[in-house]
Length: 320
Image 1 (cartoon, rainbow, N blue to C red):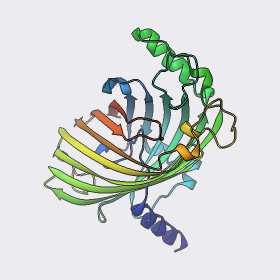
Image 2 (image 1 turned 90 degrees about the vertical axis):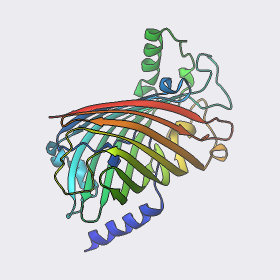
Image 3 (image 1 turned 180 degrees about the horizontal axis):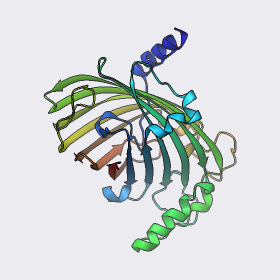
């Protein structure tokens, strides 16, 4: 009874608040109709003809009942009346200022930063309530140990672009412990051709502490992820649009780690933009065993002297 009450309170809280994600692989329009699959999620600002702010990110996602025995799951929410999926992912994100090729600190711009994490997650679905609830715990490192410099320099050399030379001023090594809780409610579904959902998340930890809320609209040919009916469509093709408003509490990629506060350059708390708006849209194609997606995103400036940022991404996966 107590556990049920706690979950109910958390759900009510999340309906009001949540967090925007750089790599959000848990939202309903990215559902794969299988308990066993692998998906590679990759973001790069190259897709938006840019090379600054959020410059690159990837996520290697494994979903299988095998992960049900993961002891970390005892810290995640698993409602008894929900269908559950268990996942483990490796995630990496990197950020740079605009003039990344200069060796000096770019005051007034974003600091260099990279983070790598092991992400444990559980996604629950209630077809009766038309609800999805997901929780995740990310453990990792922000700083030189996340090899952001090596990755970006290697990619730029391979593609013949300018060599980044400012990584020596990046955010210093610090621990990443982040807990995320999200909820999504389907409001409208019209013949699995159009659906509208509201969503919200809260993220608390040493990397990101954010709250946000938004919606997503899906249009095309798809199997309704909130339905218990048999998935009859073996080929799905649909588009989505996802506006998200965020209230920012803490961002270690801008402000530095919580424990090692001597990074060469950070953005002060007073300069952080506490309210941001992010808009994501894309196209998804699925067969019975394959998944492909192209996505684009933009976000308003995240600190006073910053600028708006854009990036894109591709995702592909397969069931097994």
